[in-house]
Length: 542
Ligand SMILES: Cc1cc2nc3c(=O)[nH]c(=O)nc-3n(C[C@H](O)[C@H](O)[C@H](O)COP(=O)(O)OP(=O)(O)OC[C@H]3O[C@@H](n4cnc5c(N)ncnc54)[C@H](O)[C@@H]3O)c2cc1C
Image 1 (cartoon, rainbow, N blue to C red):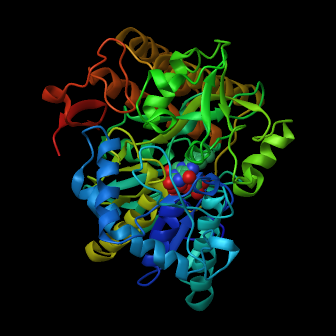
Image 2: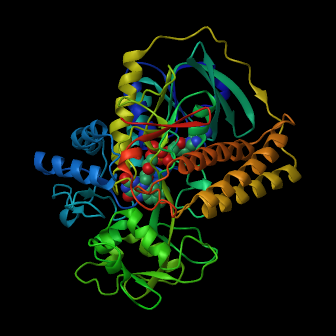
């Protein structure tokens, strides 16, 4: 492990140690020195918390074609087909490689030679979701990638990890990213010269008050890319997972879609199985449809609303739920609940960002020397709505592709000198409390104004409130002191602004973006991707 302050220059900096960053780092290490920086420990990422599984066609070409159609269908007319084709075609090879590196997906009879077990999730036409340890797929993927990267590090020292170190900015010279600014846990900052930077910093669930995402998901990479002048795309499309645990004072723990894949029903507080009124695929309808149905049943749109919606598995027989879902069962048990015997209260929560830093099919952003992959990036692969369990696969496929492009494009170091390490003075107690209060206000405002159900008046209210928050942050920024949380607050404000502007500009409803005042899909005007540069939104057909 290195301290970021020990590194002045390195070939490649990878920001983020989730599936996309780790997969890319492994590839990059074949031809240069890689520094993987991650804000907390290696295990703290959205990847680590992924439960349900990884979608991959495992039955030859027929299923590759069906996986493509399912992905395109879920994306509601906006999937960039060439990206989806790469995802489903290259996915099986990437997963096979991961299995070779030691990822232990669940198999029949717990036998290492047994057939891989596959489950089904919403909007998949067949069971193709591989899982590990029942409901801890992400942790196993993360474990196997870290172990493989460490093996490489031991054999030729090409990958170094800087934990508790965050990227806070990019240095652009002549239109090219030449260095990255890092801040470590001791508040020591340093500028590191690079040949290329890959932003694999994940999503931004923390922009909303209700989210399944861990605390690290504050959209930092998206914010620093935008600040450096890179284009963002499709920022209005934020996926709300329909079923997060809804208990007062308890984090919005995810109740995987695989529960519905195994037969769970949704019931309102009258006991009615209400999905019959919303979609022919019932509980396995696309995520946005289920999430809005729950909102309409009295939850989600207004956090103060007290009507409850429940997940019901009491009728499910033939599988031992505590074996199939050990992590979820354990978590529920700590709150006195059981999948076998109880109705489980649920509500939607912000889960996955379809938009992000605009990239081509090889992770190239609109800035030379800057690449992005995984949830931080937007290739258009998910369109307006991600198909369940496609994002771990996205990280593997596009993480590897981005690394390939970095190696192919490489134009060497610039002359930019690294700066000496300098300690940034921390914030005082009062300022720290103010930052936390501003973050809380921003999260509540985004939930209320740019959540599941949007309209012009609420979006404009959101923009007005964000303007006040940004002003207060500017005053804090001006005192020359800083902290991780102040940086995160700025990142959240930046991402929130992009979401609000794009959501206001898209006067139609599509996928995860629903406008009460424009409730229909409008292909004539909006079968296009929103693109934002320097705060200006335009629409482009890809
Ligand atoms: C609870 C939950 C369950 C999920 N279940 C599934 C599932 O079953 N199947 C599926 O396909 N998808 C699932 N997802 C989505 C999926 O996990 C993510 O989309 C995917 O893992 C993203 O991978 P990533 O590599 O892009 O980013 P992440 O895994 O989020 O990694 C981002 C990394 O960047 C680091 N970072 C962030 N900012 C900075 C900074 N400024 N400086 C340095 N480091 C930084 C973080 O610390 C982290 O290491 C789930 C998500 C959640 C939250």
